[in-house]
Image 1 (cartoon, each protein chain N blue to C red):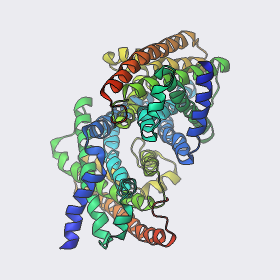
Image 2: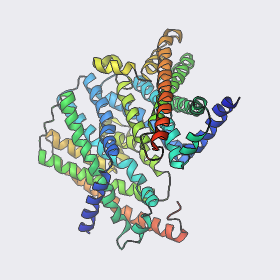
Image 3: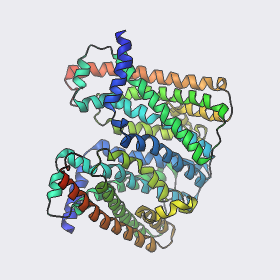
Image 4: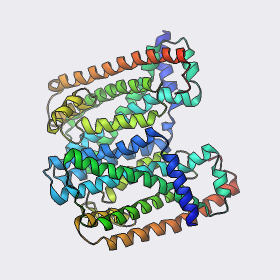
Length: 261
Length: 255
């Protein structure tokens, strides 16, 4: 019961306390305005370069924007505590670490999902891209899978934040890597072999590919393999993140470096 | 005045070069976009002038990247460091004191421009043959100055807002798009074009592209300088109003 309370109530309080993004001054430009302009930018570049169609860039850039809250908010899970001076209290608390950090991931997953859905819906309306209503359910499932897997990667970022002070810079670098490698603007099949190899191990790659297939009219069942891979990758990164958190937490205590990263 | 700008610019460049992590991001962030864009143009079988034009536009993106978010956040940082009051009290126009601040950001962005051009040459084999190298370098210098001035206007306009960094960050891609860094202005909707025309980077990037492809860059450079100068005039007026308001309401440190 205590773990459940920690998971749900602790996660929500942490989300509300640590992320000033709930302010409209941040929420609107970061989650509504920027994703739309990323879509427009790449749609127009795609037209100039003479590649793909608007729908390809709309889907890739809308879905990858789920990564913004997933990566930055999870990085803030540690970085924000440090800035607020509450990191030692968090680490000293007897709370179980798995519900503590996974609970913090839950609102972030929802946030990422909503950002991507907003970008996709409004982007489709403004660009007059047709996404048949029959595909909406499947696309929502694919976006949810991407948000979950990216939050797993974000949890790994949160662990690294015990050693790195500039969590926003780190999250930007990870986001940029996803934009290049995850098939957002260039199909993975059109990339050099080594890039395809990297892409297979990144969150978003399989989810974006599945979203393209679903938008093209394929059934949810036919992309279940890709979505499962996406979720497994998320679980892999989340497990790695929790293990790294445990180890770095221990090392921070041993070396007294918790607040000096 | 020139000494003030020169010394403060150099001091700011040194301060901004201290963080290896920030320096890495200023190279990598526009590099990610440039890489994607090079791959897209390569996928579209672009070659020759089209690829060179894309390389020039991509390389200039880094200059704006280095300015957009940081300039919006610049005065908030001064406030946090407790130096905003000193800047306001200095016996020089407040707007003038911000010129070296944002100019240093654009200068750091110029590093990423060089890095992106080298990246395009080495990783993608893009032939960087600049038709008029002297005019190109001049166009880069003027563009850096103009983007610095635009950054100054953003910095002053956002002095009252604690979350200005988010607005600055959200301006990054719109400016890349509507200033024709990679997309011809004529390909954008007609209602966007007047907006492009009042933004100095539009003219700066057009001048760079003209110099690179052997066309005359001078008219574009003239417009770039004119728009940049107009930002200076607006910034002086806005700063007087903002500073007066902050003094009158005692909100300089509290915004």
